[in-house]
Each structure stands twice: as structure tokens, then as C-alpha cells.
Image (cartoon, rainbow, N blue to C red):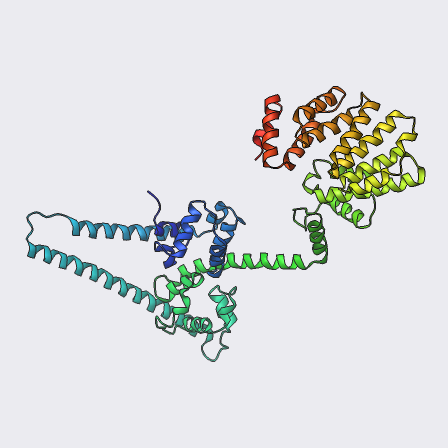
Length: 478
């Protein structure tokens, strides 16, 4: 049997809030959603903030776990509320069963008499409860008057609004220092009776315990125990918020945050590893990364910060470094290295511009000639000039038949053009010539992700038909 609204209110430490106990109210519906593990809408979260239910708001947004939330509740108070509800349920059950109990031999007059007596009994119980509340209310006022006279009688300096707010554990509420709440607090502090209308500002969840105390539902000790816990939680939230504001105003934090946003790195800007800060500084100085920093970025430790934007920036600096070195040495192999980095930095036009400086037809080195053609073919592929890239890759393969690099280029081009048989055949040749199968599979994943819906379906069907074990990763991709 699902928990009732009253049960949920007690379970979440809100048994003292009337709207939480009543089925169908906004607050009871939110508790039911939290219990069912359903996410709350933005409006619902704003409502919790407006009602000053900060602990429940932190639970709903995931700042704290359910265990942390429930462990912070006043378990003694929850036990009292559960016992009170159990007594109320028992009284209701007794009353309902008595009214519904069939009495075949009972006459109509006797039945009316019995119902009248039962109703009078309920009214007497309600009247007794009102007297009990009035007695507790008068006791609370008398206690407050006695304490006030003891501390501030005989011309002693009266307590300030701040002191009274602190006494009632409401120092975290700015409205406790201004009317009407400040006037209510002064009256309660001095033991002055208040009408129900005067207590109307206490209808918010944050002040519901103060309202219970004012109406005699609880005594001063019970109020203080609950208010102390609520104030401690509220001050903790305020302290965290102040710390967050101070942190976000820190120039170092702001600089780190801008860097993370620039390179699309998702992490806490005030907890950056020193290596990442060093990488940022080198990028901002347009300085090629130190070898140890470049290695760290490509390690498992640097993986969370290895965003595409970060890698592109690093490869661009690396490309500029090698391009400058080529202009000083005229070493074509250095130009090829620079071109590869330009491609990784998504700057294929710069790679082509640099490759235009090389004259492959003039070299007698077939390996160099093939490498230039292959690199140029890769740049043409990046520029979607695939037919030119195929021609360059084919010529490179003829020059160096045992080199796997032209084969992988041709395999990727034919896969992108949906010539799956040809692409698969070229990739097979590449593996026979030393290409790593893992590298080929990574390239296939990249091609698959960039394909349209029809291309994905066709490529997936072809590869799974070729080798369902090797290409099982296709089944796991959405």
C-alpha cells in the first residue's frame, strides 16, 4: 500500500506543514514525485526555493544524497509525529467502525440516538483538544513573560530585533528584522497574546514551527529543538552560497573558467590540475607544448581535459612549429609532419598550401614521393575532394605497394563514398601491410558517426555481415 500524503510529509521531515499533509496540494504532490524518483520541473524547484525548503531543494537537484538528507532530520520529532498520527488514525478507525457497524435489531430512533451520542463525543474531544491548546498557549506566553521580566525588567536595556531573531533561531531570515514578522517576534518574546489573524504571516513552511508554538501546539523546548536544526541547515546553505560567490569573483577562478569555456572543457574551474594550467599558459603564449605536457594531455590522466578544441589548438601550434622549421631547413619530411598536424587542427587548406611548396615529381625517393601524395590525398579528403584524393592515393600505392598508409587512405575514401566492398578490401590490404586493426576500427567509428541515417544503416549492415564479432561495437552505438 503506497504511503499517504501525511506519511510522506512526516518521512521527509515536513509533518509540521499542513499543506504537506493534505493530498492533492502542490507540496504533497512534489513529495510523491521525489518518493517515486521522478525529476522535478524547473517551476517545482523554484517553488521549493520560494517556500524556503532548502534541504529538500538540494535533494531534488542532486546536491545531497537521500541518505544525507534523511540523516539530517530531527528523528525524535519525526517519531513524535508518527505516534500522533497513529493515535489519530486509531481514533478515526474506531469512530468510523462504530458508525458503520450494522445493528440489525436497532430501531430508527435508537440509531439516531447512537449517532447523536457519537457526534457529541467527537465534539467533546475536539473541545478538549482546543482547551489543551489554549492551556499550552497560555503556558508558553507565561513562560515568555517570566523570562522577559527576568532579563529586561527594572529598566534593563530591551532586546534588539537582531537579538530576538537570534533567540528564535531565525537570524538567517532578513524579514525577521522588519514588520510584520519582527513585530510578531517581539510580542512572542514579551509574552503578549496574538490573534489568529495577526499570526497569518507565519503560514510559510519556514515559519510553520513558530506558528505551532504560537498556537500552543508545541512547547518552547520542542520549538527550539526544531528551529535550531532548521536554522543550522539554512546557515549552511547561506555559507555555501557566499563561498560560491566569493570564489566566482576571484580573478584566478574567472580566468580558469574562461579558459575552460574557450576550449569546451567541462570541469570545476577551481580544481584544475597544474599540468592543465601549464598547457593553457603555453597556448595563450602561442608556444609549442613541452613534450612532457603534450604526453600528459594524451595520457589517461589528461583524458578528461582532451577536448576536440584543446587538441586542435595544440596541433595548430605544433604545425606552426614544424612549418617554421621546414622553412629554415627545406627538409620535406618536416613539411609532411607539419601538414599532418594542420590536418589534425582542422586546417586542411594550410596543409595544402604547405604541400604546394613540395615538388614530388622532382624527387627520386619513391618513399618520399609516396608520402607526399598520401598526405596531400588526406588533405583533399578533408576538403571533400574525394575523387582527387583517390587518384593521389592510388598513385602513392603504386609507388610504395608495401606501405599500408595509401591503403588506409583509400579504404576510408571508399567507405565514405559507400563503396563498402572496395573500402573493406583496401583496409584488408592495409592490415596485411602492418596497419593496426584498432586504428582501422577507430577510423571506421569516425566515418560511421559522420554518416547520415541511411549511410549509417548501410555501413552497419555491411560490416556486421563481414564480421559480427569484430564489429559488435556497432550494436552498442545509438
